[in-house]
Image (cartoon, rainbow, N blue to C red; front, side, top):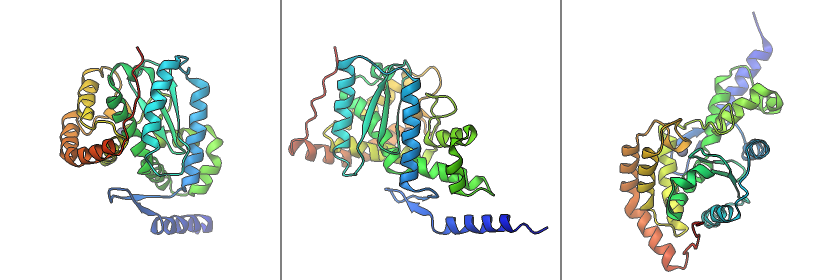
Amino acid sequence: MYHPLRTLTLASLVGLFAASCATSPTGQRQLSLVSDSQMASLGNTAYNDMKKTIPISKDPAQTAYVNCIANAITTELNDKQAWEVTLFDDDQVNAFALPGGKIGVYTGLLKVAETPDQLAAVMGHEVAHVLADHGKARYSANLAGQAGLLAGQILIGASSSSNKRGAMAALGIGLQFGVMMPYGRSHETEADVLGLDMLAKAGFDPRASTQLWRNMAAANPGAPPEFMSTHPAATTRIDNLQKRMPKAMNIYQQARSSGRIPNCRIPV
Ligand SMILES: [Zn+2]
């Protein structure tokens, strides 16, 4: 039986594929079926929902500390997004960043990321996922898996709860708020490398990143945080970071000598 609509849909999807492979900052090819503004819109919606649902920290010193680090990193990005960070009052050892320039940090993370440099390492990693369009690649892959639906239709239908959950999962937020969906190995490695450069460029010591991952491995009895997904293993990850360290140290020293010395004090 001939289904004109189905044929049209598949043809459109093929067309989308042909025109929609993007290259990530480290040269990985990835699928891109949605626009930056659509991703930003999804990110903003998710973030606003989270701010309504999860308690926000009322501790001014901790909030200022987290803002100080986020600002130091994002002002060096040369992108046009107005970045925003929220400190959520929750014991999870976790953080995330969403398209649209939205960063979330949980107060539980402050107990494990013991220094400003270590906290910067987490934030650099999360922001790197956004800049490398990893959420977009994952969302595009989800869309591509749903033959018969066009990207636009899914986005338009994102107000229905099941599609909204799909979008949230692709952004890394999962079915319930706070449950982070691990990225794949290639995305994790890329976020580690880009994140390392990013924190060094802001004048944070990139060597703190390896200690951070050790702290994470030690303090991770429950569900793995986004950045501690089962792959790559913590040891592989530390090896990869060490390989990149000489380049990151150059960036760091240049940043420091040109006056980028962040002054973010740990709240006492
Ligand atoms: Zn990650």
